[in-house]
Length: 368
Image 1 (cartoon, helix red, strand yellow):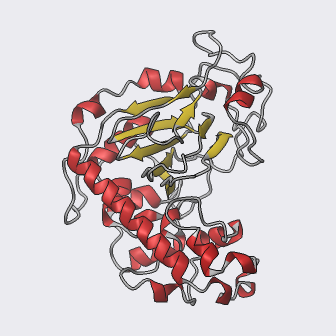
Image 2 (spheres, one colour; image 1 turned 90 degrees about the vertical axis):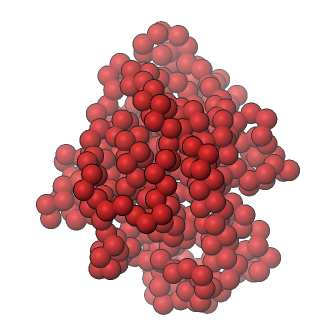
């Protein structure tokens, strides 16, 4: 992805990543095992900027949560269900702050509405005194609220090189979320994901194993998690775990159903009898431990799990950046389905949509 003609944002941190870590990427390992660790890839300055941005964004998100009169929103006019009254009290909302996946007052339909249409004409804007409300929560689209995160997810040459090694010359945003894990965070049980909306899957959500192959899928969605202060054993729990080689079964494990398994159940049930397509060895769970400034990338069919954070653990700061290869069968469209159209149109109208950003947000077939 050639970004040589794009304008350089004011304040860009040019030395964001260590070039030698980028150069050490092993494509064969990535395709065979389904993941790659960019160990210590952030420079010291990169770590500091990344952590500061995530902390600032969390403060923004918390200010909106506690400062908005959620009960006063006209949900019916938006075709949305109202939150339960006991979930919009000041006490309940205060408990929804401090980290990601804590906004238990927000029904899935409201989150989707914000992303697809933007929630305006409400009291939300009144609490955003130090920043402009973008119609959706910072947790769910942080790059709309922070110039550093916008740069690293759409334009920064070193980050575009990193994503290009994973996905090839052209790639599109799938989604970008904050994953700040506070003390007591429940994490996520074992699951995987489909490409796009699952229309090309060859296995069910649990699968029977018939699709095991050594062929790496050309159509991929790759998730990259950045942990500016590290992640792993001994820092309060909640480490990320993967199953190397499991992506070769092409099973979008429980992507759209109830997720129930912890490690013991996963090992006893789904993993039992499954082998690595290249080595013939039994599949195994691998808990990752990453030093500060590291990232990890893994493909969409890779089952993964995030454990519980200890009750006295510090917040683990994290950003999830997911990109995918274009779908050659997609209908022509100006924007891809991972792009909040209401936001992209406002940025374009304000003449702030750079060529680099457009390449990330445009449709699979942008000829529309």
